[in-house]
Length: 313
Image 1 (cartoon, helix red, strand yellow):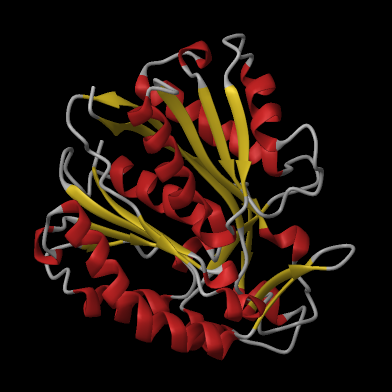
Image 2 (cartoon, helix red, strand yellow):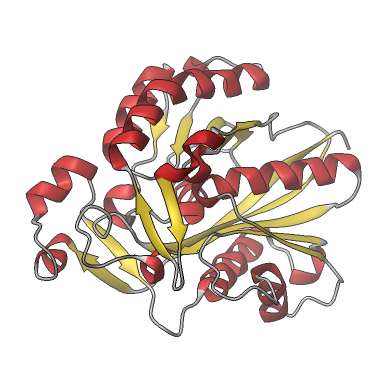
C-alpha cells in the first residue's frame, strides 16, 4: 500500500436549533444584519448531556456504519477539537470507550482550532503511509456554544455545535493528496479561546482581510501538490466560518466546476466539525460523485491552515 483513502463519512448535530430571530431576543441584532454579514440563518445547540465526546461518538458511529466496519477494525483514533473542557481522558479515549473498542488503538486529540480536521486527516494519512496504522477514525468535534459570550453580538451569531467523522484506510493509490499546512504565529491573537472559563473572541476584520487576500493562493498550491488544476475539482469544502469568506474564496481559487459547501448557512461555525460535517452532507445527498476530487481547506485559530485534495468516498 502506498497511500490512503477516505472510505466513509458521518456527521451529527444536536436537535435544538437556534434561529436568528431567537438571537434577536437575546442581543441587539436581527435576521437581516446577521445574514448580510455572515450568511447564517440557523445553528444547532448541544445541551448539557451532549459534551464534545458525545458529539464525536455519534458522528463516528455513523461513519463506521457507512463503512461497514466495527470499532475494533480501527487502530488509530484522532479527534480534532479546541473546546474539550476536560484534559484527561482525552476526547479520543472517551470516544473509543463509548464505541467499545478493544483493539488497543492509538488515541490522540489535535487542537488546531478551525483547521483541526484537515490537520488530523493529514496526520492519519502520514501514519498509514508510514505503516504505523492501517485504519483510522478521524473526527472533528466542537461545542462552540459552550465557550460563546452570548452578550457579544459580533461572535454569538456565528457559533454552532456539531461533529463530522471520516474512516481512513490504506490504499494502493494515494487518494488523499499531500497536505499544504502552515500558520501566521504573529497573528495568533486575532482568534482566541482564553480564560477561565474559556471564552471565544476574535478580531473579525483582521480574519476577513487575511483569509480573502491570502488563502486563494494557498488553496491553489494545495491543488498543485495533488497534481490537479482547480478547474478539475468536483467539490470545494472550506472551513465554514462565514459565507462572505467562503463564496469569494471559492471563486478566487478558480474552481469553476465545483460544488461549493455552504453548510454555514444552516449550521453556523462549528470549528473543527465544520469541514467533515459539510462534506458528509454533500456525499449523503449525492452532490459529489464517488472518486471525484474535492479540495478540503481549513483555516482559523492561530491563523493556522491546512488543506489537501481527496477523492470522494
